[in-house]
Image 1 (cartoon, one colour):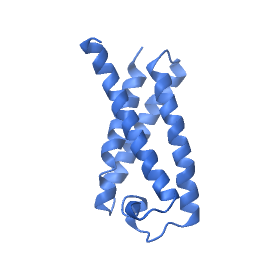
Image 2 (spheres, rainbow, N blue to C red; image 1 turned 45 degrees about the horizontal axis):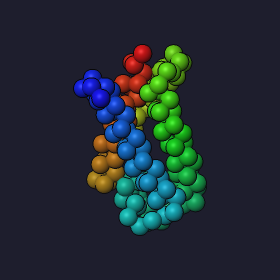
Image 3 (tube, helix red, strand yellow; image 1 turned 180 degrees about the vertical axis):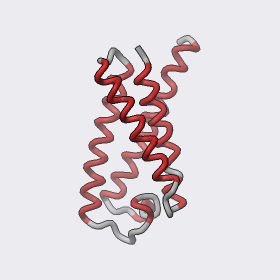
Image 4 (spheres, rainbow, N blue to C red; image 1 turned 90 degrees about the vertical axis):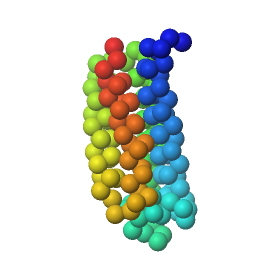
Length: 128
């Protein structure tokens, strides 16, 4: 593997790890685990309501689909898929910002994987 190829693969590898981390957090909220309460929904719940738990389960499923989409983007993707990647990059930048202004210090740490994912989607939108 050449140096240039490694530079193309590293952002995607880090993004996949970040997406796995996000899936772990989302599933932890779904199962209402103690350790995740300060890391999700602004750290404002002692117990997650059922509606939030269902919403986070849906987001976990969506995150699995995002992982699949990122794999597709590494190959021959259409222009439409590249444009979707750009919008997803913007969405994860917005996510980064909202996590950075959270009341919960633990939730602010979630901005690190979000910015990695945003960078990977922006990178994928530019690869031809």
